Image (cartoon, rainbow, N blue to C red; front, side):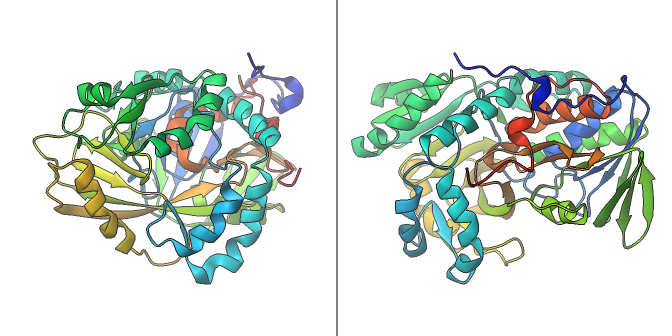
Length: 433
């Protein structure tokens, strides 16, 4: 078994005795930010949320709703270098790059390639596991504080394959995940049918991650947590924070409207966090991995759990509002306009996958996943600014890691020792080693 225990040298960084009743600004009101706010309030702190888009205004509202127990697989894999030319040419691929953006994303992609060496993947996996091994426990703690009925469902996560080659292509990743303790059950065609009888019979192989959960309305989860914070004396300011200033025991949060002082600041702004880091004198290689979804009318013959078509990388999640179809990744920059043509091209594949789908859509969405090339978030104190806590860059598993990140942040602000070794999540870690 692998050592994922905390280490005092790993960045716990205790500052004096526990300190409740501090004024704390949390920048970002997605799942990470509101989780921080809820746990900070539970520790006795006064919380102000900052987000120009309001609660769940970013990636937290439209994701696939999957909470992956013991998530430890980095997104990058050793085949990514060979796949880059295909990314540029395959208009229906799981990863696309807008040609005009390629020169801008190239340095980040080179760091991604360096992160795909197996020894680097091992280090990232150990670090991810140190957070995700308590992800479900943290969700239970969050929902003990903010009871939300019928929001999280213990149904597992299903991946299905229409070809033997597609199934075998994922074998190395499955072995890797099992090595780190992730439960994965292998299914044949009959097993798939028993779980999801309304899927097309083309799927002959599959896997089930039985301990994963479905959040059937991520937007409602985040909004309810934010409402809880506000009902207990918290504040929400829908303004864009331009910069942070930190000196001594105080921090200033500065927008176009005002400058406000706090005892501590938490940067949980997702894809917008790197701009605030630069105002504090350091930078991180944060990239916006753009994710699209279409919301489809839920058929009578529906699904019971999130289901991914492995070869197509199309995921169908049964949500409160319907079936949410999510896709792969687009690199086009943070501010480029959305392009839903790929989503609508793949809608036909979704209907092959679940024949009862009518194809009628009642919503489309684009969100930005804040991603680092080694698949690890940035978590811990800002270099040179002990009262600024960093909590962003959760890649594709922000929904999974939001509550456990909130617990870590609350410990840091309160002067307690976190249960996680924070050294691997430092913004100063090497992305080239």
